[in-house]
Image (tube, rainbow, N blue to C red; front, top):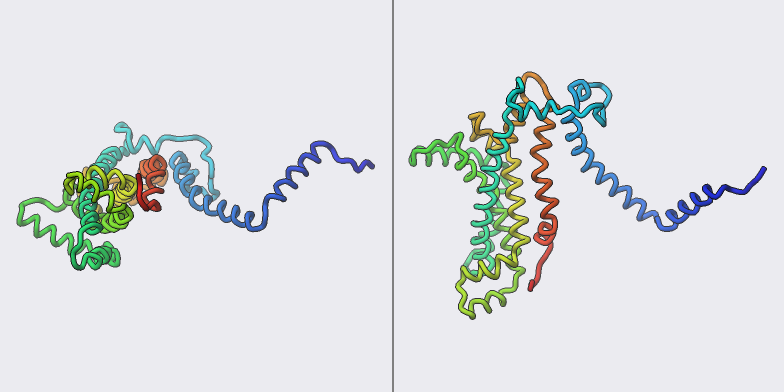
Length: 306
């Protein structure tokens, strides 16, 4: 009996030996933990997307179906095709979410920029206490804040003769209560990392304070501004509680409310819910992936630039 190994067997042993020599126990544990972490993150998203193409039998069966036998677009047709018997007009919900999320993000960044700059650069008594006190709003759950907020807006609406419910402008105003504090805190800390000497040089050259903010500070703070914009957009895009309280008209529903309506329908259609959730998730993922560089710089960068 020959003891010589085949060339293929020797090549395989060499590859395994090379991997074993490079892979220590610490590195092996790290790779396993990284794999588990990625699996926990990626698998739910994959399951959501794949379930949107499954039939009801595949979703409701006893055995899990990881890959649909056929890519069915029935769920997406129900969301967007007017000829479908259970047409949901989900495009209108997408439009309502955009009409709320984009203005909320822009107004938050504009107001937080001025407020954060004042706290970071101006000297006045109690500014640190004020900055920390702004974050106290996050110590209270939203269900407690929304009750006095709704009562206040209802009285204001009676005085100024406008309807509080089914009013997207009012809903944007309520979102500012949740987005402004964290945006103000993030931008204040970032403005403090920008050297004041650069601004002083611009002031000496004859630039006004608003000119310094527009020509010097804002260009240096682009990563932080992008990070805050995406964060506030995501809050308004995914918000459910305030929209659920302030919106009653089906034509005014945002995506979270529309998905909840489909989910609570007497006829269960989990594939339609998964399709709607997929559509709702994709824009946020595109924003994060396309602006990842700015997000990383906005959360970690500091010091003088230029």
